[in-house]
Image 1 (cartoon, rainbow, N blue to C red):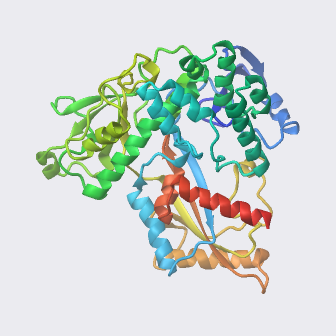
Image 2: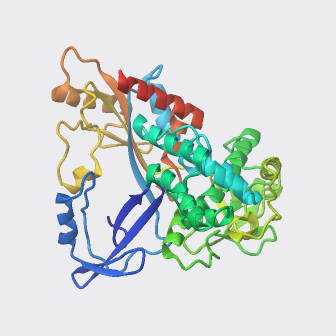
Image 3: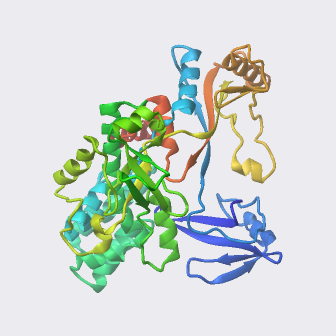
Amino acid sequence: MRAGGLGCYRKDAGHSVKIIWVCGHQGQASCFNSKGYCIQAYASKLASLNEKLIGIKVGDFCYVKDGLVLGQLLGNRFTVTLRGVTADSEHTIKAAADALGKRGFINYFGLQRFGSGSVPTHNIGAALLRGEWKTAVSMILDPREGDILMMFLIQKDVIAIAREYYKESKDIDGTLRRMPRHLVAERAVLQSFKKFPGNYLQALKAIPRTLRMMYVHSYQSYLWNHAASARVQKYGSDQVVVGDMVHHQEHDDENVAEVVSECGNDDSSDAFDHVHLDETSGMDLPAEGHSPVKVLTSEDIASGRYSFDDIVLPMPGSRVIYPNNDVADIYHDLAKKDSISLTESVHNVKEFSITSMTGGYRRVFQKPMDYEWEMLRYSDYSVPLAETDLDKITKSKPLRLVEGNEFVKGNDFVNGNKENDPLDSVISSTCENSVNASISDRDEIHMALKLAFTLPSSSYATMAIRELLKTSTSVAFHKTLNQETCSSSQT
């Protein structure tokens, strides 16, 4: 991994991410674990772990002077291959791929932001904002439908049994023996009850900070998503209107307000918490944490200086302003339905109060950067259509990798004859390659669309794909997909 240092990332219990920083020092790498202890390690020693790790590989090491610090995450690079693509014509596929690069997508927070179980994390966040500690704990511990991301029915049964057992018996030790270790929040609450029986607030605070703060952040994201939908429904997605908010670089305008990251004033001394909150808060902010926003007037619209790309919407907090149009009402109306005020707190627990957070702003429309797409044809589903990071680390390409001779980069045709239809050229050349590689006379030829793009931190590739495919990202829809997958795997 290159980006100011070596980074070893380990996903722990499905929720928190423990980070070990690795920076260069006189031919060695200094590893700082989450408790601040320093460990000296050579890159060769790290590479030797590949013989012992299962399902994980490390590599592509380099030594640098300084390690990574908060705010240095520029974004993420994605390569996504959509197989079995169908449409009324190839032109439709081409137009959709082009449109994603030209117009981008609504920058919604993705499904993973709200959880995939029957109790969305933003509902728990709403209970916390109302000061309903017992209700929040019940939402965390009570029986529920299985998480749709857990594909193994046996594991789902174990979780359901543990929840049911606690509800019926209130046996903490027995429940802990039954509760899978990756359920960090549930286990933390139960462990707290052993020390402080009946103290629901203390139990909530026992949940690791990076996880418990996600509940409130999720509610902020829930309000933002609805506001973004209302903005598009009311005013479209191709122009700015009076009352819209945009990033603004001049500081001498009375309609300018300062943008401050909601993590900027956090007085926590836990460096890991800072990192996690920064990467999950959804703030579309520069590294220094300050940038002004402007509410547009009719004169601003007439000037033509701003486009739909510039529109931002606030993440609720004490130091944000709202659009000067109907979109502002969405925030307050939705919060009011949940018996929540965005301007007053009903309790004095700072970390569970929106009024104690500074808030921030998020871009409504996001264009993918360094956008490339390629059409491929294939017949064998086992043939890889894209080079993986593991392939790059091992310096080898997967067997029978299908490669096209032409490539479409953004909206330009690269290394091809621009007088011809680039899509036709890509399909034709790729089809010939794949035929030579793996296609037999009896195989059916399928279409695939390979996308490569970069998104800034806190933007979701799933939302870009949603825009391309025009599919739902609701929990209910994904549950049906999961059920279909499970059914097909059992037959």
